[in-house]
Length: 286
Image (cartoon, rainbow, N blue to C red; front, side):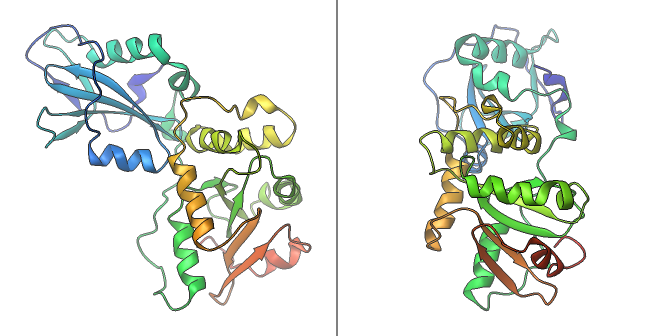
């Protein structure tokens, strides 16, 4: 695992050089880490060293390391070293991998900064709530979505289940002629209800460093691209499904977009005329 590639490195030096403590009872999860968990990150407790509880989070293939003080009032992000310069974090990760490192190994990447999921929360430019459609659109921008296509292309949001044949057909309609040519960007909102394994597969997709390629491989028949592994955190998918349920949406795909005039439109199922939908989009992403 290439932990030296972790973003925003903060080197936390301790005064003692005792070995990292074995994993004991897991403490209360700090609120910022709980938030990442709810957004679909894979989270594992690293153990306690010199009063610091360690956590590893993996989201979009990006590893981050956190240490909380004993009183739970302070949280530091970065790698933990002892007074001799030995990397405590590495020891903790190796110990965790020996116990149940399957999930950690699946999401390890060499350059997570090149694979990061786009910013999920748009802080400006959103219209004021005026209609239920606007409220729905706001919910979708704050869902756990994955970008398929170029970041500068016009945007559509679409709920999709990995095992939904209509979703696969819709994506095949779009991929070669439109997505690959930069004419549309699909912000896929993964959910899971078509099969028993759908939710775990969607959770895997949400945390993986290369979700677009994994999705296309799965569509092409490579079932190993989206494994349904035990131990995958599914809270990010549950959140997406809660949005569907709150709006009484019960099928996939369901596509939502803002047209050239700024109006929110909803398309249920596989669109029959892709070209008409795309000509209704603004020229750039919103």
